[in-house]
Length: 126
Image (tube, rainbow, N blue to C red; front, side, top):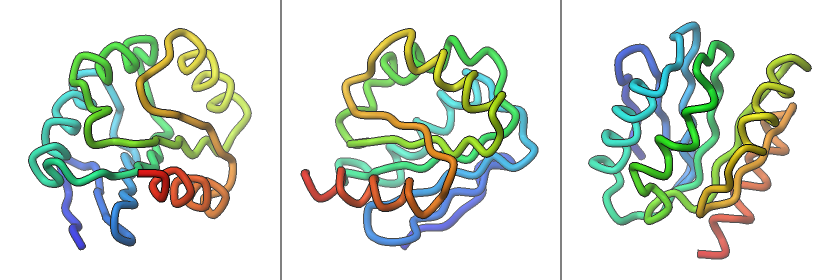
């Protein structure tokens, strides 16, 4: 299973096909997201993955869906979950997710285990 740091983002495949991207204190921008998606595609290629994102410091969130669509990641990302631990962060993510649908399902979770269970279910469909 793969594990690496991309800039300051920790990326870890915790079980086959389940990938966690933890931005820590790194400020998440659309440019960083685009670069990370390129790296994930290089690492996993055509292998299907389900991704859990932990990103407490996101900016320009309205552009994230556009970046995801531009990179056409639905070929290898089958589902994505965002772990949002506080109410303000959850609301910001909800607003962004509500702006435009992506080709793969996305959900917001407060609890990591609940998010992982959902990602496993989604990955099993592919």
